[in-house]
Every structure is written in C-alpha cells, then in structure tokens.
Length: 597
Image (cartoon, rainbow, N blue to C red; front, side, top):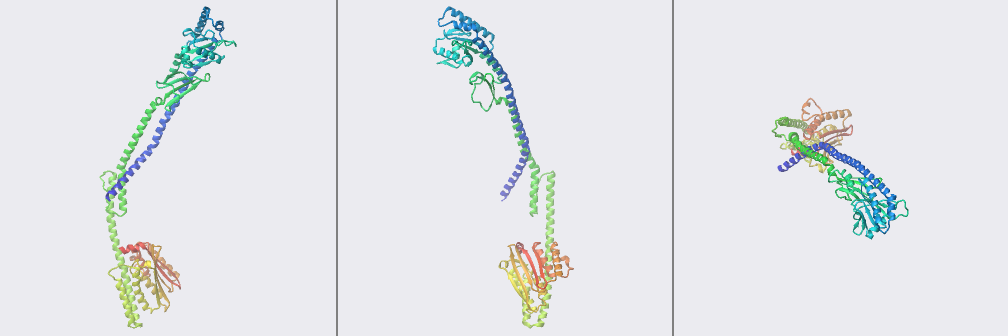
C-alpha cells in the first residue's frame, strides 16, 4: 500500500512539473513561431531578390544576343544580295577553269572583309557553289565537296529557305556519320540562307555565317554566379547553343533556382540554374542559430520549471496535501521541511496550527460529550419522575374505583415498563421493541381511563427492525392520552404508525381523535418548536428552565436533535374538533449510526 501511495505521489509530482514545463513552453511558443516565420520569410525575400537580379542580368545578356543575331542577319542579307559576289558565282559552271580560281579568290576576299568588320560575333563565312560543288570558306579557303549526300543537303537547304534564314547547330546531322560542324569545320551555330536574293531564277548557292562561340561563351560566363550553377542559351527548338557550368538537364530539381528569359525577337531562351543551398547559405546559418536558440530555450524551460517546482510548487503542494489531510480529520498531521525561507516558516506555522487545532478539537469534543451526556441524563431524569408521579396517581384512583385484580394488572405493567426502561443502560431499541415497551404504558393508561379509548398499531414490516432511541415515543403518547383521551367516556382512538419513506427516512406518527388544538394555541406551539429546532445543540433545553409548558414536546425534540442531528424533525398537525397528529421523521442512516454507538 505504501508503494502504491508513493507511486501516486510521484506521478502527481511529475504531473505538476509537466504542467509547469508546458506553461513555459506555451510562453515560448509565440517567440518560436515568430522566429521561424522571420527566418523563412527572409529566405523567401532573398529568393525573390535573387530571382529579380538574375532576370535583369539575363535580360541584359539576351539583348546582346538579339543584337548579335540582328547583325549577323544583316550581314547575311548584304552578302546574299551582293551583285559582285553573285555575278562571280553565276558565271562559273561545272567546268572549273583558272579563271574560276581567280573569281573564287575574289569572293573569298570579299567574305573576309565582312568577317573582319564583324569579327566580334562572326567566326567565319562560307559559300557553297552548286555548279562546281565548291565550298568557299574564310576559315580554310576552298575545297570541293565530293559527297553527293552533303551536296544534296546543301542544295535542299538553299531551296527550303528561299529568301529566309534558318539556324543550324554544329551537331545537326548532314549525312551518315557527318554533322554540319564537321562539314563546315565549325563548333558553333550557323546562319544559312540562299544567295542571289533578287534573282527569282537563282541557283541553289548557299551562304553560311558561323557564330563565334567563344564570344557567346564570354557573354554567358559573366553571368555565372558560382561554379555549381549553369547558364544555357537555347534556340527556338530548345537546342543548346552555348552552355557553361553543369550540363543542361531537362528536368530541374526543386532544390535549384531556375530563372529563364525568352527573347521576343528570336524566340531564343537564356536560362540560369543555381542551387538554392548557395542562396540560403547565410540564412541557413541563421536558421541553425534560431533552432539552437529554440533548443536552448526549451532546455531552460525544463530547468526553470524544475527550479520553480522544487522552490515553490513542491512546498506549496506539500502544504496543500497537509491541509487536505487535516480537513479530513487527521489531527496528527505534520509536514516535514528543512527550508529556512518563507515557505519553511509557513510550513512550520501550519504544523503549529495543526497541533493547536488538535488540542482545541479534542477539548471541545470532550466538552461537548460531557454536555451531551449531562443533557441526556437531565432529560431522562425529567421523564422518569414525571411519569412515576402520574402512574402512582393512576394507581391511587384505580384502587378507589376497582378491586385488587385491576390494581395488580396495573402494577404488573408498571413493573414491566420500568424493567425495560432500566435495561442495563441500553439507550436504543428497535421500533418493534419500543412498541412492545410502549404498550405497557398504554395499558396502564387504559386501565386508568376505564378502557375509554382503544389503540391501533400500524407498524410496517420493513420498519420493525429500525433502531430507535428509547422513551422517544412515550411523551408523545402521554400527551395524546392526557390531552386527547381525557374527558372521553368512550369512543377514543389512538393510532401509532411507522413506515420508511423512499428508503431514506423513518416516519413515526401518534394520532388521536381528541378535541384537537385551537388555532391560536397551535400557532404558539409550532412557533416554539421552530425556535427550539433553530437553536444550537446541546444547550437548547438547559437554558429553558423557566419554560413551564410543552414539556413533552420539548423533551422529545431536544433528544432527537442531540442524537440524530438537525436532519431529524418533529411536526404537529391538529384540527379543532377532529384530533391531533404528531409526526417525527429521522434519517434512516442516522438511526443505524446511533445504534452502532
């Protein structure tokens, strides 16, 4: 049992400490939420600002690329419409002559001039002559294409473009195993278009202008924020023109920041991909510090709650337990403490108060017990002589009117009555025993009044075994006989009944069919009974020695209050000319408690 009590005490103490910790954490919760929100908000702001800065930089770079495309397209238009170059190309045919070499050299010279003027963006310029299958390039001079597949691809490209332009990647396939870059000796994107734009009957000669890849990369590299990021220039088909950094991936990760700018002029796209971890490097440190502070705050909350519990809550809890034990009647309570502070003084004061209260309660209890015993003996001493005087008087008058047999019966009943009344100091009898005892008294009174009244007992079976204080009904029956039956020559009826109401209250009533009580007298009696019921016991009757009437009712009500408490009641109901009924009601549990005492 001690182990169970100790376990419950420990669990309760842990509960108090847990509540204190919860309160501290509840106080920290708004600060934690605000701190985390501030960190996350700063990350969002940083991300938004990085995106805006990147868009501005990419937009500026895309403007340069658009300018380069415009320049290249303008150069291609000038070359494709150059009358001198077109005339040299058109006058040469399949037969390759020394003059053809001179003409192609002139073409190469003019192309070189265009390259030198636009060297920033243009790597080299090439022209394919369909009639002689000659490939003229500022990069390596001239060569003759022998591959029919390559020839067909170039011719088809010239016819397909018409007067328009198109862009070809260096890795675009031309023939089996041959790419455009291998055929033209370029590693960058190239613009292609047909020559002789103003001639509707033009030959399928093709102009190719290749971009300077290193120049394009230089523009892109200046935008690269870190080695882990990458910038990619894509054409309108989504093909990579130039890229620096990591290899381009079609599906981006959620951990990367992706910013792209589309060109309204060329439909090209410039995209930058950068890991978010690089952006959040400083904010991650701030978040780490915040989490560390939160963890430290939680640890401090636990420590502070323990300090508060051990310093404040624990002694208060011990004092509260001591008060509960004292209020439950444990007068020997003593709360141990070694504290020298205010709580120690408070607990020591409580221990002193408990000792003083113990002495006060014990002294008061003993005093009340002595008063109760004295009161009960006083009341019983009032009953027995009073009854004895009346009985002797009855015997006297009966002896004058009857012979010795009746006198002997009366004396016999009187003897039995006193024998039960003084039954070895017993204070409580069952209702059934009390009725048997009472019958001896009633029989004496019937003999006295020459059987002018009858008695009827209506005792329920369930109430027969209920304990009842002895001599509690005798004064009520005495009043009913003296004030109700006296003066009646015949026809008097006395009814004594008992029952249990709702399993909680014992109801006992004494009813007579006498003359009843006048309304004024009845009001006075009820007022006196109410006054007596409202006074504190047990000194309710000792202070009323000057009162000379209502002796029996006062006696019964006083004894009921002493034994059964304030929940016991006595009521009087009377109608002039019809009779009087006196009813007592006692809590059933109080009857059993008195029986145990």
